[in-house]
Image (cartoon, rainbow, N blue to C red; front, top):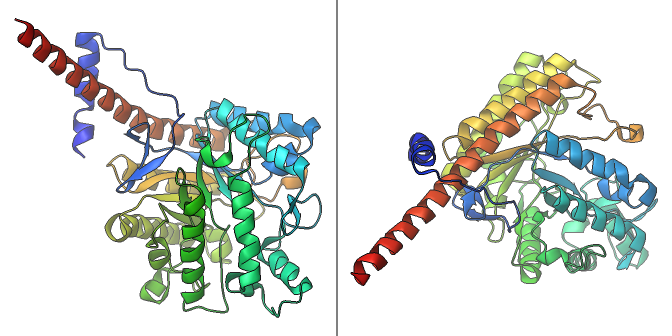
Length: 421
């Protein structure tokens, strides 16, 4: 891309004219322009992580140092985006214990997570409900409706039953209009939040045509945007294709379609998850990596040429329960090199969020995919190198923008001097 060709010109201007180019803090709202995320007027490429446990842990004030420690470690390794849950429905220590009834202590935990992310200059992606039973999910919503006499028979009624949809819309409104008890800023007005996510890995296996999910996304995207026009919105998709591109899938369909779902108005960028070890069980590491490379490149190309939107690789990982550190490092390097190849040319791949970052002392949250950066120097180095590479791209664009501002200011000053003569 031509911008890369002027990188040396940027350095020459700095050397020859003594320009000190301040790269702005990440304190604005993230927006989109074409296939790029934009922050403070410049393209935003960033490395990041998942840490679903943060609200739950932070709801216990004696454990909040674990959240702070995770953000501190993330910052040291250049990580700029965190994805976490803004839901916990029913069950033990819920955020929402029944429809419309919320646990203030848990909400204060989420307040802390957001305020701490702001402190460390990290953007947050907040997911609003789970597809799975963990932390309640769509099953809990359907069960609540059943308790009220609704004729619901399947978890997938979450997407169609009007009462259930009303419960979920109320949750959207409650979270978005929440005023942070620590910062005083309403969530919908807080630029620390990068984006909302409608659901973690939505699936509707009862309707593989995709029509049910398509209608639900359309309705919920419109509703959320009617409340919050500041933030970006994504669906939470894993990236599975519908019938139009079935061969690209790992041998199953879940009622979603990466293309049509992400073409819905109000959906600002696409997401993809990547778990070859789960999706291709029994397959060799070589076959899994081969699938992964095609999976990544297919989605980057489709985001760029069909969707004309950015794509964030919002989950990926490899379990150490079934592989070694070397294999995991290789998977991370494959994901990261593919993202960087796209990003370095101004492409649609804007970053990757590995699953999952864990702080020391949270052994109950270990799942085989966890990464405690202080425990594994090898993977920590791989992560830090990708952060550094994407950070250089981000800073280059910011410096180019500052130079353009400087040149315009010089031109205005020059015109003013000429008019004064």
